[in-house]
Image (cartoon, rainbow, N blue to C red):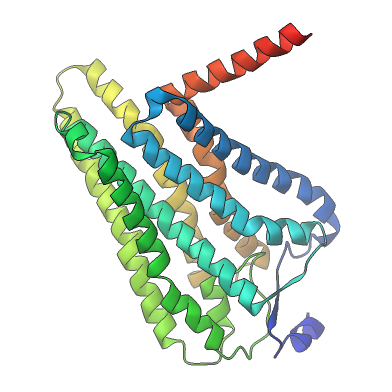
Length: 320
C-alpha cells in the first residue's frame, strides 16, 4: 500500500479500489457483477420497449417510469467500465479528467432519479386526490416541461462544484474508496481550500435529495389521508396498490444513499470492504431493482410482458 501511495502522491491519476483482500477471487466476482449489469441493461431496456410499443401505457405515470428507466440505464453505463474493468484486470487507475467526468454523471443521475421519483409522487398525488382534474393538469405538454426542468435542475446545478475539482491540489495519496469516482472521495484527497465544495455540495444535497424526500413524504401522507376517507375497504386496497411500487422505488433509492452517507461520515474505522460494498449498492441496487419492482407490482406492465413472452414462446414452438 505504501508503494502505491508514494507512486501516486503527486500524479494526476487515481487508483481505483476493487474489493480489498479479495483480489484472487476477482474472476469469480466478475460473474455476479456482470449478471447484475446485464439485469440493469436488459430490465430497463425491456421497460422502455414495453412503454414505447404498448399504446395503453402512453399515460403520465408510465412516461415518468420511462424517464426513471432511462436514468437507471445511464447510471449503469456511467460505471460499468470501471467496476467490471477492475474485476477483469483491464484497468487499475483513472485520470483526473475521467474521474471528474464520471463523478459528474453519477451525482447528476442521482439528482435526476430523485427528481423523477418526486414527479412520480406528484403524479400519484394528483391521480388519487384530484382524479377529475388529473388529465387536464398533467397534459403531454406539461410532462415535457417537467422532464426538461428535471434535466436542467440535475445538469446545471452540479458543474460549479464539479469543475472546481479540476483546480484543486491533490497532495494526499491518490487512492479512491470505490471502483468509481465520487465528489466526496476526491475532496478527501485535496490539500486546497475545499470550503466552497463542502458548502455548495451540502446546499445541493439539501435542495435536491432532502427537499425531494420531504415533498415525497408529504405527498404520501396526503394520499394516505385521502385513501382512508374512502368508505369501501376494497377500494382503499385497490387505490393503495397503485402506490406500492412507487414507495418501493423510493426506499430502494434513498436507503443506499443514507447508508453510503453514514459510512462516509461515521465509518472511517470500518473495513474498506464495507465502503466498497455500500458504494456498489448505491450505484447498482436501484437500477437493478426498479425494473423488477415495476414488472411485478404494475399490472399493465406485467400483462404486457406476459403477452410478449407468450408470443415469443409461440413463435419458437412454430419454428420447432
